[in-house]
Image 1 (cartoon, rainbow, N blue to C red):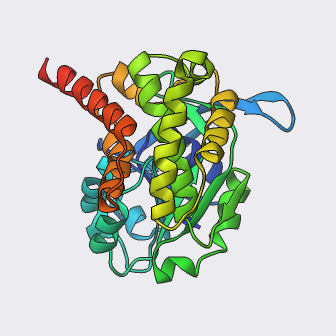
Image 2 (image 1 turned 180 degrees about the vertical axis):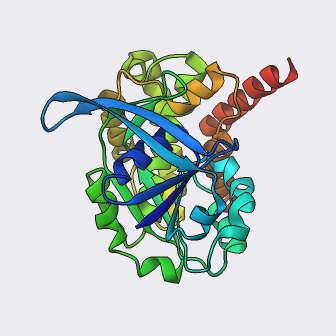
Length: 304
């Protein structure tokens, strides 16, 4: 399959390398470079070995973008609209668009921008980071879930196998909103706290965070239930604790964004939760406080 990866961050590069085993992969990035070099390293959990490989990809070539059958969008949530605007003229109506980012809230905008394209959303627990410009380290293995948000997208269940072949485990979801909400709950709990306290995920297992994590999960559970996805706060807290333990040595993406004084995805994580809570007249003071604290941090380094 001819695939273009829109966005060359750690996750985009990881998926690009993995998809290249059986597909023709091309990258579209913010620079105008015609080639992209990637050195990928990571642990193969099944074989318990460390693997390394180098890849060379074509990049930013309009004819390859125009001939792509699938566009995998791996930019941050707030970058989706400008990124799609930049490539929209090159996309065919039949091009499948798969969006993979933290948070929720870009779906409506994307459907309005691409009314004819099959649109699929994905959430992944695969973890990667870039220690240098050309290097990507695959640091954690977890499930990827994807499903259509348009009628055309809902008919493409076979793409679950394409992604599973590239980087297992991957499963198709008949209702992708449920795993998106569950991932949002995890992000609401882990991302702002690790950013504000400048700590690895594992430190949230300390007793000092216990009450706050419980309150965050309870608030998210109330909003999810109002949205039609009934769940208890204790169930979400168990999921959060599981992720904290499994990713104990990792820094969250929001932690890294704050450390490097970059814009975060807080408006599409805590901010989206707050907006949906307001629609149901549900108070979420704990998540509101965390959203405000991150926004103040961003304002401090943007004002410098």
